[in-house]
Image (cartoon, rainbow, N blue to C red; front, side):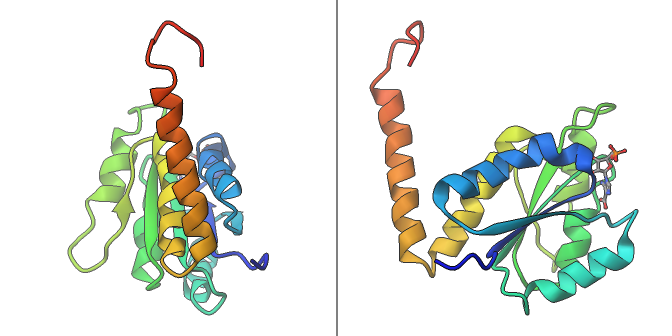
Length: 166
Ligand SMILES: Nc1c(C(=O)O)ncn1[C@@H]1O[C@H](COP(=O)(O)O)[C@@H](O)[C@H]1O
């Protein structure tokens, strides 16, 4: 596979990276090329529009957008592109990410954002889901996903006693 990014991981602030790196780690494991950028609907609105408008012509197949608090980034990006947007609610300090979740999930009908769980699990699953979308047209990624899922299942089955370290 070429190194041309197929997934764009964007986030409202550098401070979101400890959460969003879990999406990047999954894409690394699954061998899906991606790019990472800080883009904010609030702080860099012109860049956000440009990023969303250029996503399709640049060949991105999925955008993962993480943001916390008044998390407008995923919805605003989704409003400007047909590339599927997966939203990751970053856990905010003040409200534990409930604000992020509701900001991202409650889109008006007609502009979908696929919303994941709050925090690290959401970022990890966004990476896996992005790979699954890419896999619709990419047999190599599909096989890596199959192996990864199988390894996950075996790890649980091989260590059924919760007191024993895997
Ligand atoms: N929700 C947004 C957007 C946006 O939606 O465009 N831009 C930044 N932010 C969020 O503000 C929080 C605090 O950011 P700072 O840590 O930089 O103050 C971050 O979680 C970021 O995603």
